[in-house]
Image (cartoon, rainbow, N blue to C red):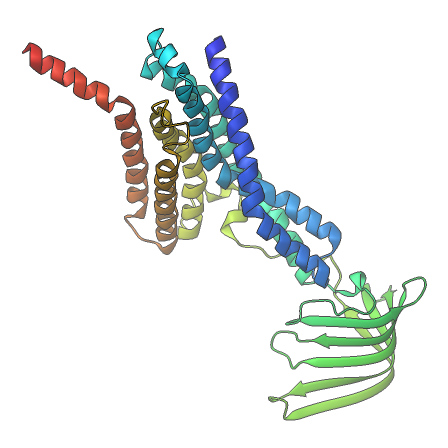
Length: 363
């Protein structure tokens, strides 16, 4: 690898990675804040939040790295162009084709990273996220009780305890609301509650003392009220059977050859991300070559609009494939081909037209 290739590759890789991380921070912050809010309300414990956030990063990066690479090439070469470095390179015999080959070195590496993220790492980590969320939504909220605060999913279960014992094994003045799907809501109040494990039935129970159980049915027309001195309530444990069928969590090897439209859409999407990274970089090389008086960011806005058009059309075609539209697969290939030809035209169109004029003038 020549010194020039190493220099330009370093500029592009560092810029692309930094921009991708900034995009990750901007795009992911709202999602991360959402999971932190679930931790505050008790729907997720703190450990689960950390696992979810850490495993969301590859999926976000696989979608943001193509844009980061595009902007990275645009900004890095734009700086070289505004500083007249590209002019000096051209004067020393570095042709447009040679420049494309030099830029291809870091871009291919970044595209391979996108391929690895989208086809291998992101599906695996996305499944971990879904498993954690599934388990958290199907387990009890009692392990994360905080005194004086309602916790849980209000639509499924809410728990309140006025205080906890010193060893945190007993809850005092407990209020429990449960609303299992297909069943009437149940409201339970008790003076105390203690968790214990029954070896005989291999299950975890909550032992409630001195309270009442009220069940409301038939649009609040029928109310059943029962008082008790002791009542055992079985709790769901964390070892629940996970049932996840989202296509974005399925390994790429299982998507290959699958007849399901959702699986085909997901496969095309995973392969399109690295392909888009390579294709759109040609356009970035062309648009980065600006007049020094214009500045390095002169064409940044139209370039971003072009990238967003490409991405929007790609997402639309993915949705059409998922819906089973027959021509969507062909249209997807046509989209990639169209942007490839556009990039080649922006790079070599002037040279092609000048060559044809020279041929005609000689004729």
